[in-house]
Amino acid sequence: MRPPGGCIGLSNSQRQYGVWLRADHLLLGTAPAVDGGHKEIVGAGRENACNRRYAWAMDSKRQRGRPPSSDVLTPAEWRVAEAVRHGLTNRQIAERQGVSLDAVKFHVANILVKLSLPGRSALHHWEGVRLDSCITGGRHQMDEPVGIGRIGQIARTVRDIETARKWYGEVLGLRHLYSFGNITFFDCDGTRLFLSEGEGASNSIIYFQVSNVHDAHAALAERGVEFMNAPHMIHRHDNGVEEWMAFFKDVDGQPLAIIAQIGPET
Image (cartoon, rainbow, N blue to C red; front, top):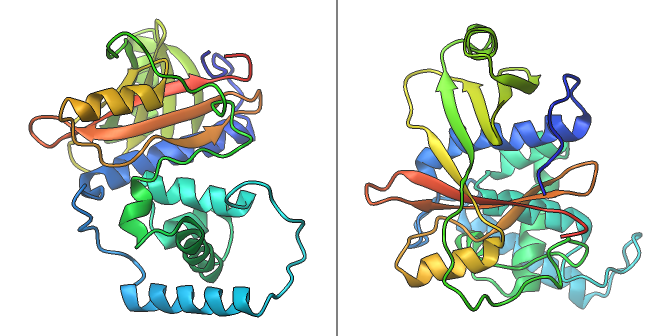
């Protein structure tokens, strides 16, 4: 199921999704490598200190005001975990989620302890799924080999977003979906074109559509494809449709992605 499109007005859900995709262009050039050599915005010593503080708090059996969660992570921790898996730094997560930097650091430390992960790099490749996700319970092993589907989205950087919006819409005649700030989306007969304003030229990022992002991830990894992160949900639209993706490298080390839209009825 495809996410809502074709509307001129921009909902808060679409605005948040646009912010996520804008982060793709800014971060993929330095996305974490599989070997775990990614440098943290928070030093290992400080992160370990956070882990020790968390362990002390748990040993002290301090009660929190929120009700207990049946999931492995709380809703706030899931939001941070998905952002980390997408490649955002602590500061970028704080800015996008409207919380303090210290809160993000604390959530990251909690997540690593709860999941028994050695560090942030391991979280990039953790394949957990939240219990309230549409994909939970629907994952299955496919009997047939997984193949890459049609191109679901293409991302390009442009020098001036207003000029590009007018040219792609009025000159090429593409159907405008929605815009926010220095990003805009067009429909190309079912393929989404994502334009963002930026300096200098950059390679286009191609997002290949798949029906099951976890199965596709597993099958491609078995074929030797090097993934930058595990499948993760980057956004849930107002109608319940979830956007899932995972980034991998081509033969030249350039980023590509698999993408899937999962709805409540799929």
